[in-house]
Length: 127
Figure 1: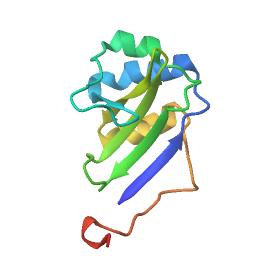
Figure 2: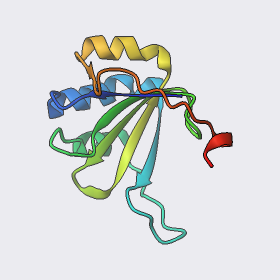
Figure 3: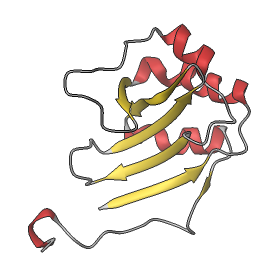
Figure 4: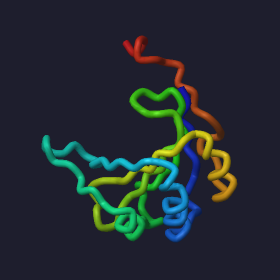
């Protein structure tokens, strides 16, 4: 299993918005509350314009991760965005893994933790 984080701390709000706007047509978006909510409560569905308006480089909820073989996640890139007017939940843009190299190059992203993190365990041996 691979979960490799990349730094996006150097990107401005406009660059993060550009990242979302450029790659949104090539992926899919989901929403999730940061803390467990009462059963049946779901985040509101926001338009792409509302999401872009609320993306802020100052959010500590922004992150970029490449995943491969992770349980309950498709292989590929996931970009998390904290939202200024909706601080209790985030938006996640999911992209195909073939886009990783292009995004890393275009936005000058660097790996965190010195490289890929390999997780040698599987669901069957977590005891």
